[in-house]
Length: 78
Image (cartoon, rainbow, N blue to C red; front, side):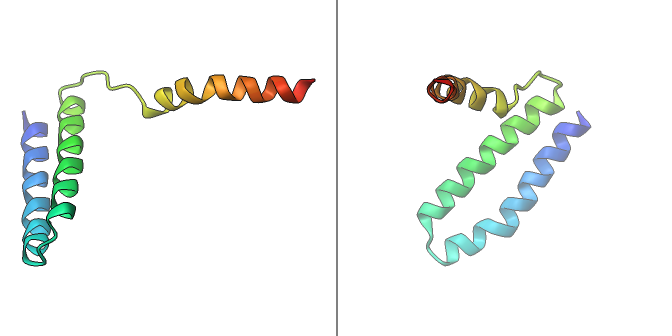
């Protein structure tokens, strides 16, 4: 429970520091991107705090690029 409160307080502090400047400068697009990325980070932090097995992004990258690498290495072996 303390981990989740820590994540919430850290997110609140980040919002308190960053959002007023974005609003003052009228950077609405940047504000939405900032909030979206922060939301992704908070959700992942919650999952880690709750000890849910979060897969590594490297697994997705390997899944996408392995077939391409196999094709390229196959062409180089000829």
